[in-house]
Image (cartoon, rainbow, N blue to C red):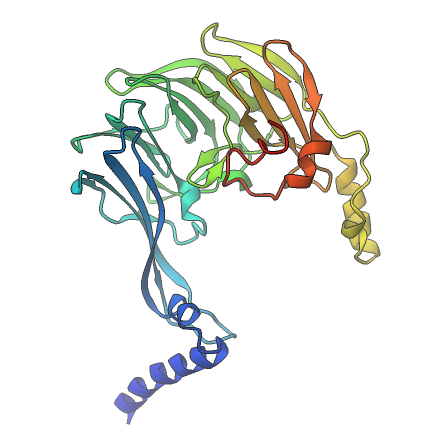
Length: 348
């Protein structure tokens, strides 16, 4: 009798899922117990001969319809590199924390200009993989830190930005990249030559800023296109560090929108909700978005996630001018970081 029940119960659960989701096979399958996978991104090398394929995989346990949906019991990431239809590198399934709800935040990669190397961040470790599949691993430059942004300067070395904070550890190793929900305590800026190691150019404590970072499909960019400047927030001030002169060349209070009146739609709740909205809007917004318009102009997004008042400001490193771009950019801002050029149509 017990054996029959064990056979019948899973079948009943499948039927319940089918009824709940109206027979939509895709929705049904995505919630079925077992292992699922999804290609996060395919990155072609500049010469078009190599393709890096990032895949996310997860295992769902048995749940109860409506009352208890299936729980994720394991997560993995896998990087493969294909050259002329031949596999030259395969990381295999590498574990991610089960609470890494957005696995793409824990991963990032970029090809060198000549397509000879791929730089790949897996949680906190930076991995350099050449076109033949040879690998060198580089831990973060400081203890308890996360590499949050990196860019090739040339075919041999990279500009690297790291921040203390932003990771969860278990069993002695980093397992979870928390990203923008974390508050950093310090920033490290320097270069990495895979053969010689790190060279520190700047390091300073921070005043609890928003955790800015770049990842797969999270295109917030602290490093300029040529890799010679880094824009960042110290919690109060917007700063630009010049890697050539090795000094801070710009520092001023993060600009704010003068009118702190929230959108009427945000005030549609009850008395307590309206009070919360007004109190939040009265506070200065934090720097929560950075996009380089070219190598000398950087766009700032202020209060985009943590405030009801959003504003956009452009800084020109050559003229030292700050321009308010809110009127032109606010209408096209869609709270999506997936397109690094989202602003160009409205504010080229």
